[in-house]
Length: 340
Image (spheres, helix red, strand yellow):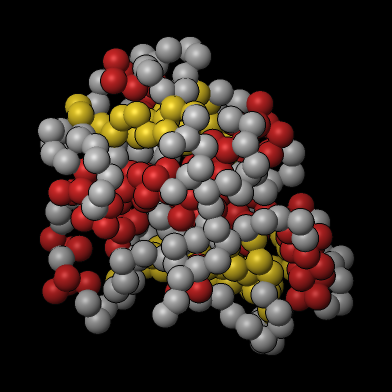
């Protein structure tokens, strides 16, 4: 039994279920409440069969049921976290897995999400320069979007080091179907997904302004692709070498990534010739990276793999919570995936 009380709002979804799994195995956290909307009153294991033995019943999502926690994870649909967070006691810390508090630009929020802008919280990506200390000092943290973390970890060090130009970035990223949430949708039926890749929200995905904000990119073309697998993201990030960049931009990019992540517990720059795969990061909080250069165009290419429910959601949220609670950052998390 842990000693720090935590609660999960929106615990019946995929990200919420992964949070429950991580919390159950965390040596310092004690789960005191798991809330849901339509599943209120149901045993957790009835909704999440892989959590059989977790003796807890979902309750309705109400601030009163969350107030006993030291920290609350908000795993709610976009646009629903802000109202709930505003009614939490001031001494209850919160990590928002939704988008409500990620964007500093109200106009960008309106353009990509619509509705009122709830303001910005500390951005929950500890691997960005200076961000680890900011997360540790914060009471309110906005966890990253799944595509955003896969792309940002691949791109931010290259822009910061002047290796690539910030105004010519192209990203194509494939995600497992769990990234679309648990609600029943026709295009996510097994018969629609199996044996097929399909693009969606082409040129207008909501993670674009978040990626630009986190990386310093000024122009970003992003194509998300739905892949026939439950979880995982594989992002291919390409950018034009910056003017005056090194004669060997791939080597310069590798140097920038090595310098940025040499001491990071969850980011792995793979040896030359080894390529990231979603299978290798499954069940982990790891991000695997590889860098190369296109022999025809000369563009720098970074490939990035994460588990969208791990480093892309619940794992990243627990990583931030550890920092906020004064715990070792890696507590309850692993950088090693499952196989086969």
